[in-house]
Image 1: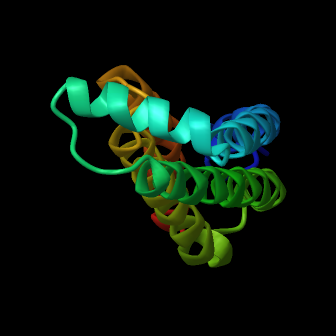
Image 2: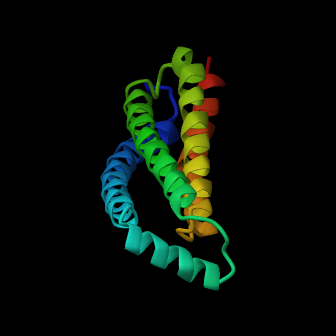
Length: 155
């Protein structure tokens, strides 16, 4: 007898676990770079030189708010990576359990929202996030949600 469940959910869950680990690694690298940026920008001579260069290009303000936005984006990225790993593990474990579909769907939605928010914040911080990055961050969560819908419809 063939086991029922969502094979899409099972496959996407495995990919999400791998992607979540990769995202966590890149988030740690981003945190390190943001730390270096913060340390460099805290030097008065560097900060004033950067502020002057930005002012010459039409930006009026200090770099402090930009660094704050980048730090918030890094924190959200780390959180998103952790949620993505948990979603992947739970999806792999429950790919054939229709009773878990609602919980899994919530994980998929949270992953999509965190990815979108982090990408928007990185773009706001001047890191030039492209639409491709935003879409790539949404593809797996959307496929995960589709898999949970398939699973739910088996109930």
